[in-house]
Image 1 (cartoon, rainbow, N blue to C red):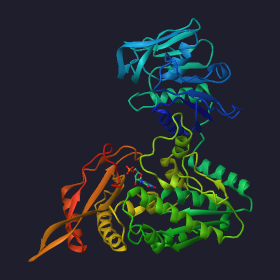
Image 2: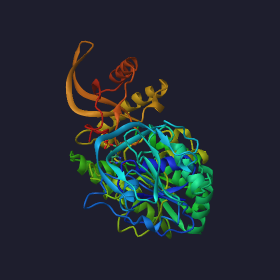
Image 3: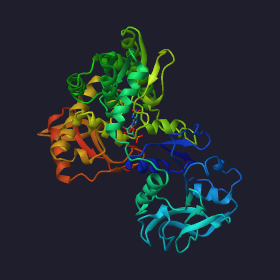
Image 4: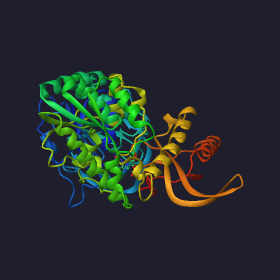
Length: 506
Ligand code: XMP
């Protein structure tokens, strides 16, 4: 495997993605929490950083721990760090060095640049520049303005590059990473979803033996893939619990439960609708609603888990970005909304935790799901928040409002599917607004609620843009909702991006 030491760059996860796209396994660790480096580590990458090596509080990592022992690649800050603290000098650059540049010089025959043509376009993003390198360093690539665009410490496998090979604007970035990983580090490109399933199932079997595991299924991709992996490892000793909180989409509970049974999972569906509605009654503050739902979920889950004799483990569908986030250089990023499902384990459930997906990115989870032959209907599903429709009904929740929103949402989503746009949208849903407006139906004046439609494009939910759905489709959906859903006489479309808006309305 490859270790990526993170100095806090926004691109660090992207480096990991690129390495994995080359079917090579890698892990990100904060520069100040580096694990023991054993024989399984074939090379190390130092990431970029928002810091400057000239700053007094620069982030320090003694690169000589690795240098000379294992192949080492510094990217941006990583490169500047090794240049500066290896006897050279880094200064603030006189010209801004952001965006496109071309490698006018590449040292012929250097292994890092194998098959990369002269003038290859690279992407720069830095305010500092390497102004001088020590005698045992050698420039191996330059651009017009950046002389030290890449260097090698002579006769070693330590390299530094000022540009970002991980972004797609660096045209040969992937080739450069492949040169480093395969030719220089000697990695084999055999990390695939199939090999992941094989080794994970074997490891789970070994770890869990005859122990029982409980796992809460949500209908989402992560918990479903985690369940199928655990099921392959320990069969009926996996006890799945699927809670109907009364805040799911129309018919979702029944249809998803059916799919899970079809997949052979040992699953219990629990109707806890009333417990959730009772807890939500009278609450209109979004955070209070989230907390109430989180609390009731834990209570219901705990009741159910206690009915399984001798259970030792709690299975969770935690994925890699959640893990990186919780140990990141800057600490967990500021909580904008309390996402209750990443809150960890309640104290009173003294179970050990097993998280089979905690090394995977979201798209890798989907690829593993495909290998496991999980239904497209589950794998291709839009993200859906844990508190469900409760945060899509602004203000107080009542079963009547839930029923109205479920109808409107079902019309919306079914239309997206039949128009063939469902898979192009990252997430969509209808929102019930606490606003009444005047309408006219036949000869009668109406005074009913508004439903807002939301559809966004996004990669990870962190940023998003609204989808430019065709007008004809919006017209058809609006018509169907107003004509069929009693209580709604007006439909609007949300055209806000995130930031500054969020995807959900609460
Ligand atoms: P926002 O609204 O913050 O949403 O732009 C980003 C993504 O997170 C989902 N989301 C939640 N998921 N519990 C969840 O499990 C929550 O409380 C929650 N709030 C928002 C949202 O659906 C979107 O995918």
